[in-house]
Length: 252
Image 1 (cartoon, rainbow, N blue to C red):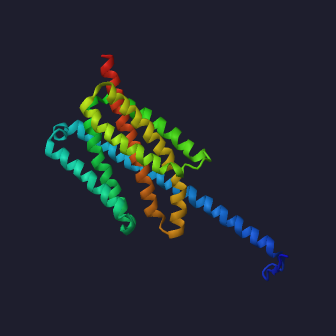
Image 2: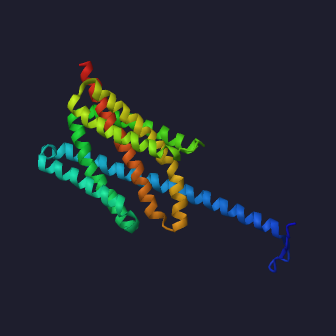
Image 3: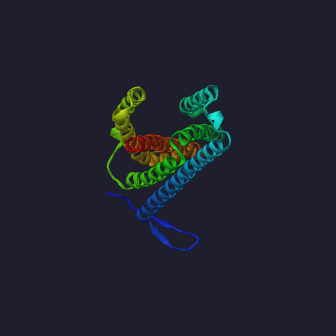
């Protein structure tokens, strides 16, 4: 039998049931989780958008004013190595990083990615780039909505997605060698696979929000979550640019 102790409020002179107080506390706690989760998601997508803006500004400015530098082998290799180093530090040392350091690495990666986007912009043309950007933005928005709305548990897809990404990496290397229809199929597969990863990472935003509240370190987990979604967007965009470029070449 449950013992419901009445609680006397000395300020108001009212007497409240213990069960009522407990229920109210649970409700307030649930509301707090919902509010903080929404704030975490808003900060995550705001930071991701900021990273994308930085990348696109760097890409446009570089392609307009410093196009020759993009096709300098030493410069481009420095950019690629820089991206790999930043990604490795971000992944393996994340727990030890301060929120400021994590944010600095995120925007450093965004700047370096801007140079890569500039190469694609000049190689495939501004028209193809902007079309791919529009399609990717619409696709990413739709996938984000699906990720937030769907109630299906996609956490089990983690190992499957890892295998698919490894297979995609190998296929992408072969596509540069083989080219033709095979490259077009690999690009289409890349768009679909990273679309699935986007839904998966969108569902993880809520998990990161809960983890951030548990560890009382929301800002750092915002950066980590934003980085995951940023990479999803960039990878979809790059595969989309290549896919549209191949289609245009086959038509002409």
